[in-house]
Image (cartoon, rainbow, N blue to C red; front, side, top):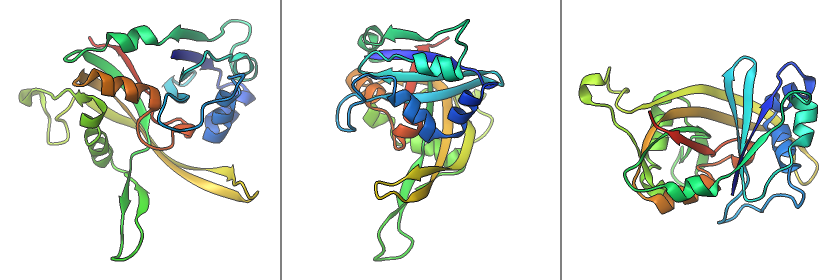
Length: 232
């Protein structure tokens, strides 16, 4: 497995196209692999995420089974004369995970749930739109995926919605164009939320699996990639 990072230049038209369309960004990421990307299934897949650290500091992170070639992204949407991309072997970090460790994490996800409006009707996938429900979505998935969000000491909590060391931000609802297999144009809704915080490892193997297959839906559109960094 590999973890890659490429910086985008928002002043360039090519970068603006990628930043405005998850479908276009997905195409650029897919084109970085000479043999294409693995079909979605039970094994490792290609995941990506955009991090907007500042107005002019935007990075695309990619986790992948194969090493990518991001020359086309740098040339069309990056800084081709001053900066290229970085790729590192992801295996050492995955191998270091142990029960009880604490890590800082970042995740952009598509928090949704299935609801049934009337008895007898099929369920419908519906997005969570409030920070409280989006955080609840993440908390419901922590045990199965080998981690738990670090809880704040009670004396540091500022209210019932401030119980954990995590912030929910960059919440967006958008629609973008998609061409269906039959050639029809469709508008795809996508609600995303970004989570930054600290977690504790509870099941290293389950966490390793999640880190390489992603968390939640809409993985092709920049959701589901969790990254870890040493906690302060």
